[in-house]
Length: 305
Image 1 (cartoon, rainbow, N blue to C red):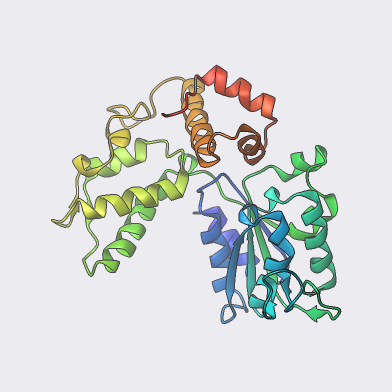
Image 2: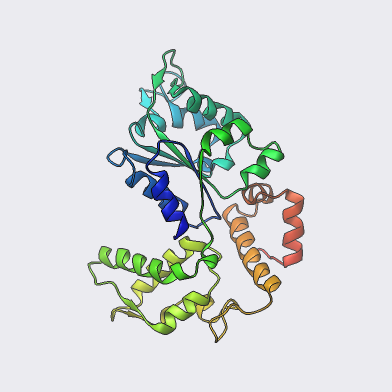
């Protein structure tokens, strides 16, 4: 991951909060884990939480814990995620998905380094290093009053930008070999070798799903290359025959056409993830609902039936 890795290794030496920025699937959690493993907290826990996946009504209970009897179903005391990460690193993934009220609650804990479990009158000290990640432009979110300025400055003392895979094609072969080793080992096999043609096609592909898409592809081809070699024929059709690649190994089409292809796939994947709820998808993409609607219409994006 080039510069991002070097920056993470430097950031690991400090205790300051880290904000990792980049598109979905670029490997932001890998960078967060690197910060943890290269830091003085490496022997402590690494606890990851997806901020966008916690229902607002359960946020305080999940992050800060609760005591028995504090609400229906709370039959025993339960520590929260902050306490589980004590002495280590707490990774707040997609922090930009938090609503303003939840941002205020998180800010208070970060400022005071202490929390109160739901239903409790006592406070507990917490010793965690917070590493956050977002696929949004939080500075734009602040201008639009969707993200608190004070929280932004609290979590972004150190900032790491993870470039999308299409802008660091030299990493594709290295990452592919890394994932091949990882998934082959799980099957008790030697890591397969990639043919020159397979690597050429992978290097020419735009990878709109970034590192996550590459990892999934390698995991898939491991199952279809029993002879220990990955050939071009083992790759998915979108990589072998997609419009992203041409015979010369370069992305085909004008710059606008290539950007449109990437934008079209990212928007479609986001819409599918949110079951085509355009309000939620627009928020994830950092767009207004009207702006997303215009892009869907301009790019001719249709819902798969």
